Amino acid sequence: MGVFVFMPLVLPLTAWPVARLAEQHLHPRTATRLLTAMAAVLALCSTVCLGLVMVVGTAQLPGNPLPDGWSDPEVRAAVPYDEVVGKAAIPALGAVLVACGRTLWRHARVRRRAHRALAGLPDTEVAVLPDAVPYAYALPGRRGGGALRVGGGRRGSGALRAGDGWRDGGALRGGVGRWAGGVLRVGVGRWVGDALRTGVGRRAGGAVRGSIGGHCGDALGAGVSRRDGGAPRGGGGRPARGSRAGRVVVTTGLLDHLRSAERRALFAHERAHLAARHDRFLLAVQLAARANPFLRPLRTAVAYTAERWADEEAARAIGSRRTVARAIGTAALVSRGTPVPTLAGLAAPGPVPRRVAALLGPAPAVRTWPPVFTSVGLAAWCAAAGTAVSAMSSANSAVTMVLILHAATPL
Image 1: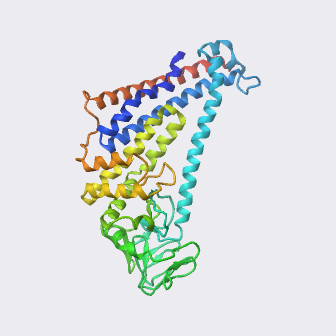
Image 2: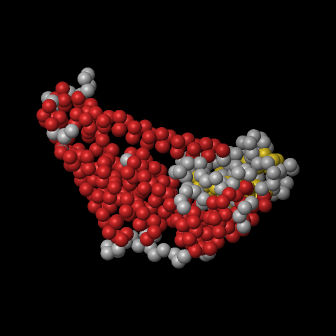
Image 3: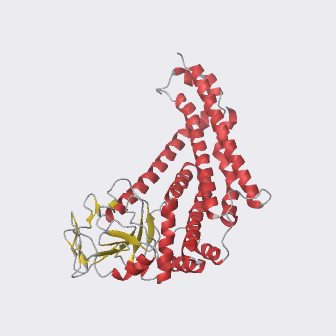
């Protein structure tokens, strides 16, 4: 096994050049996927390395539950510097597991709280919150929950019934109500229970207070689903996807600072995050950076390229790169960002001036892999080689360790 077991701990350094160059010279989609894949593989290999060295360190501890043959001097001699590094790997691996577990727990907790906060709102693609604090982010979907049945005009689990125009469990009563952009515009209908009272423009139980119907037109024009008489439609002819497919969460405080075209850019940007599942890329690089601190530059780069990816998709959707640039600049000045780094949003994270400058320039060329004889191409091949060597080193060390311990363990 030799010193090769320690190589995956430092080989992430080979990815530093491409992390910087990919931001500038690769298409954001290509850069995001490439850097995330490299970060995941390098993090896994370094964690395996710590685990292998920890086995030797654990075997040296008195009273360990492992077979006596595992602490044999010949076994320990198979791994250089095991007396120092082996014992140091025990707290190091424990710290990695704790950090990754804390990241996963925080990500799941914020998502649960966000979905719980939207439980009283209509299950539409855009959720407009009556909050003076300006922010917006893409909330990934979750499993379960009833989906709208268009044919029968009915949705399960306390859902809208188009025929008689009412909803169970604090639902809409009246057939004149209209849904637009996640906001209820009601003629004579009203919400009961935990619902909107349209006469005074408020909702009981932590619900809507004040008039937020002014943003419905912009949301609807951006392609947000609408229910009118039980028929879901929208500017793009798409039904409301609901919590299962993800939702765009935006506050009235942010919408008040954006013009109509900029609001459409906002919705297109957040939909791009949901469609490409950028939360998975961000979570993967967050975990990788927790597993190996040398991977933090890749985490920063992916946070930027994921936003650039959504920027380009939004510019293509609305047909104006300058409008998206204005929306980003305005949102960055007034917005507070996203709840956690693993959730994506228009003004989070990434150097905003660089994103605006990129949008004011020409669209980036789409390539699956950069040309070899360029700076980014050489950096990409260097990082790919480092990733391959790391994978081979960890695999070779794992096989060697298994063979050594198997031979040292009495049958």
